[in-house]
Length: 230
Image 1: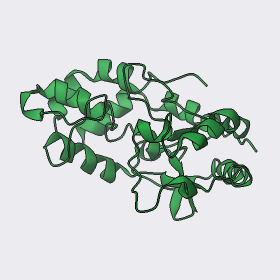
Image 2 (image 1 turned 90 degrees about the vertical axis):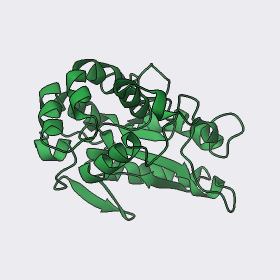
Image 3 (image 1 turned 45 degrees about the horizontal axis):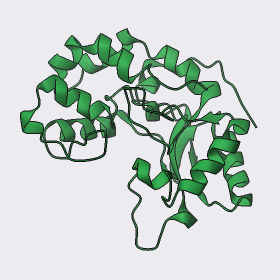
């Protein structure tokens, strides 16, 4: 079941500040035109032996802003490309911004704002007394989500889904848990323009804002539009 939509989202909807385009699904919010396809994907996964669940779906601007500011201000750890802690004290502001962007989007630029992109896992594959970390090793080789990853790679395309971060292209790090509904998300990607993002960031209290705005052209190209093909 693949549904497309020519709907033009408002600036508030694109940047996570309005939820009128979303519907509830298992205590999460999803884009209203993506929800039926995701439900169908869950049903197919269930038949294949996977209890496919959402670790994260829609994320509002305020939540993304909190994540960003906490990382920039040292209240949450910064990680390198191998998920190892970085010493933020030796990094320039721009280096810090780029390190955060490997794992966390700018407020207003997260694909989770759209409701078309979700983080998924198989609940029945998660070992007892284990918390999901959403780190690549969990979905690779002998990781507990490896079989789900293989199944998704083989079957999710039939339902309109793909992995925008299936490989590390030098921008956002590998995210095998991040599934996107491309019939809609590819259109929304085009709607999230550089000018809209600049305006959104300018109006909000974003840590490191001056350096972000100064370098936004290159950050936009490297971390926002630099995704895998469908």
